[in-house]
Image (spheres, rainbow, N blue to C red):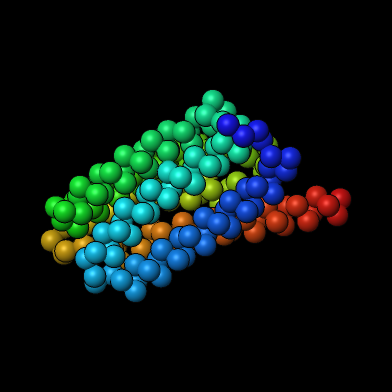
Length: 185
């Protein structure tokens, strides 16, 4: 396990920018390849797998498993989701959307907890807290769509990833502004 970086807020800025860039690229790929079964299936598995990896790297940089139990649990939830999506893709998009819905609820609540915990040390975490709450609500919406009559597509998940990109970008920018304010003080 790595020790906490010398400037954890700098790490979070980079981490949040990286998460935003990935999500933007994922949405673009979903739009570009949305009608093609192979790339769509791969994109659907990659999204939660990336979330697991990103959370694992972040928790290792920020004090390890014990210091970041909500993120550690999110790694497990996202890994299991990637596996569940792998199975669901061969079943139907209804099943995929239901899996994504459950994942959005669980990972959103865990992100909310992580943001609230980090607020004490880094400030500027309100976008992550808001994102976590919105993720949980979006999960409920995805589950309701998975029970509907209209066949879902990857484009039903793309807005979720798009809002994730927005919140990660907003968090990164907010941390940059906070760092400038702190430097000027």
